[in-house]
Length: 288
Image 1: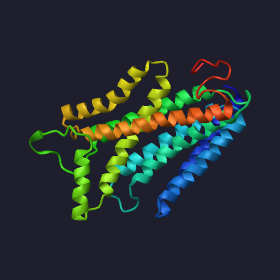
Image 2 (image 1 turned 90 degrees about the vertical axis):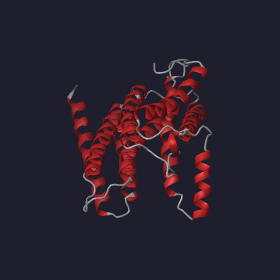
Image 3 (image 1 turned 60 degrees about the horizontal axis):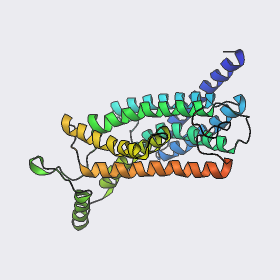
Image 4 (image 1 turned 60 degrees about the vertical axis):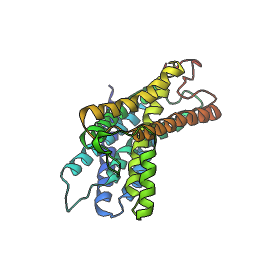
């Protein structure tokens, strides 16, 4: 590694640290925590632009993203473990901070790769692979927490005597009807549905990307198999309970993830005249 690379790496880490300090200060000082999330998006987009323009390589964008995701994740975990705390309150905004610090560089780099008409910037495919690994590492932690450590459960109760619901969304629809007549808030149910759908989105997106060479039927089995397997493991371990509604909502998220791939593919074809994640110099190969 030459002196210029060392200097750029040091500067990227320093600027990322300053960005993190600014985000946490805003989170602490401003009661509306979504403001810190918006600021994180702005800071991350600016740093991603700086990393790319200063080095002409996507590698430093990954360095910035990895540093920010790791440090915000540690910060969120520490705050979560020391709750209740009168000084700083944990809420979903901390999860959003971790997510936007990954998502903003990812989307920015995707856009720049589509708009780049020549070989000015290099290393996008390696950047994509590294960002995928970074996401999967933290996604597995989320799966472990939300399924087995503090399991996601719907606001309605488990069926008595160990009975199981095999009709998709019947229990959810029954609870909506019950909540309507009882004047109960649907917010807990909506949060539960949103979480289950969100878990399925990356499954659909990344399986479609990395399973591009697999036959459609095999991809279909993987799409459905992952949510089903997670519910079976929940049932076997006694963490939460396996429910067909969880599978249905996760599959809805998988469908959204696959749709996002096709949306990006359509944009790539329209803007750069090539398939999404296809190398400029090899029109038929992924991740060359």
